[in-house]
Image (cartoon, rainbow, N blue to C red; front, top):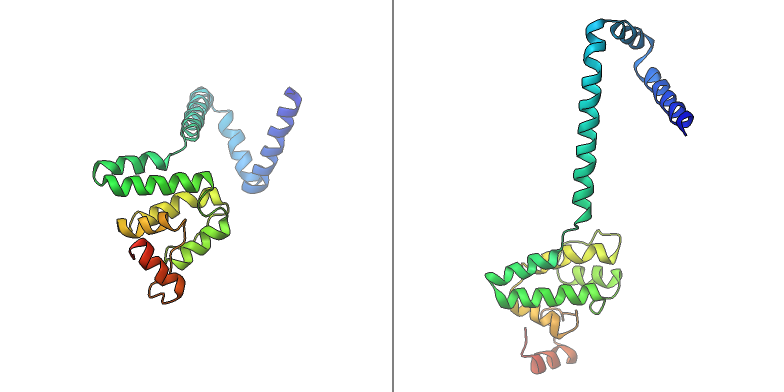
Length: 172
């Protein structure tokens, strides 16, 4: 395994030679023979290795705790409890797959309701942006979504279904 590591390192050095040219390597060779350069090189390498370890540890720590948008919605309850409860319910229903069960449904819903276009490649990735967009809506419109299982009749709907919605659910 040690030989493979050395082989990989030589390949990377060859790439750098191609990138910077022979003159840069001759200059580096002259610098490496200098006593001041060789005295400072171990400290520089240790600092670079320490920085790389700190960066890797920080990125691993950040990825270990994914952001939970649900907790943000719950915190909204301090200022607007009813809206927070409605958004949490929508978020939970979306996460469970009970509301808008496919990515196509999510995209259609966003388009029909004038929300920003869903650019996510999966349904799971589309949930948080969708709920963030819904958080700007008034509470009565959010409740309409809950009452209609994720469908909202278009404004000014004069069809039989639209009138039934107005009569049964008290309008919008």
